[in-house]
Length: 309
Figure 1 (cartoon, helix red, strand yellow):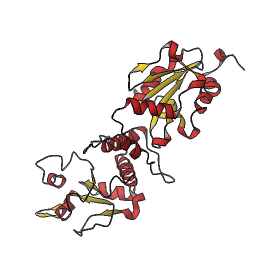
Figure 2 (cartoon, one colour):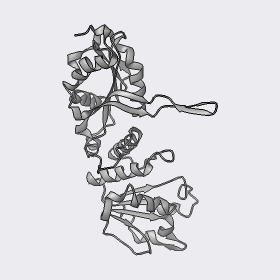
Figure 3 (cartoon, rainbow, N blue to C red):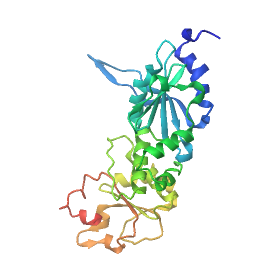
Figure 4 (cartoon, one colour):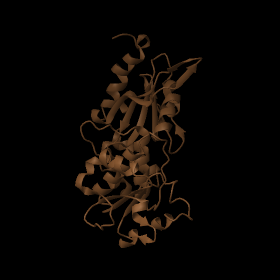
């Protein structure tokens, strides 16, 4: 075999790091060259170009506790770097994706950083290549160190994401939003606020939250409220289409109690002096999503605020 010092980073990964990880992790739980950023856009005079996108060498998922619950980032360097050579990059990607453990390796050993305790392995504690932690070990460590993570949260997050052919998988910031909301609900939180820029897929996030709550039997009926018609019609034809007949749009003031997912405009819930929402018991809906919640109902003086109350 070629001298390790003469190997490229890709050869170190192929011959040392990948086999070490695959010895304890199922291949379905390993994603390589996982895109974290698309690359910064640089403006140079009248020209623009995008820098190289940021990719995590390895992103490891604990599939037994959610199809998209990432546990570790691993960054590789060639053997002319120290074991810690990739740790800065590993930490950067792990922070962005809210991953609890970061690893780096040069093919000799693994070094580990634990975000839950803020500790990093010393030289004498470097992990041998044949001792890379298994998913079960990291999961036990995560559960032990994260006091806020309950059995209820694990049960809720064990529900896999919905997928159909041609459907995009969630981007990392979307699964962070979904997982954090589900974890908060499991821990008894009554309200959660998700802030996403326009065009970053908030409707898809809402879909996956609803899907997993229904599949976990944590809720029975969901109300999706919006202030503009397009915010109802587009989801029904797009991201929400997979709900099919489980979904119903409230209109014409005809009361319906036979569906699981209800969508409505504020206008259709409250029309002048006629308060249609009072036709439903206060606890009829188990879960309410307000799209663009900074409009309409946010102000306590708003005529729509009472709908949420």
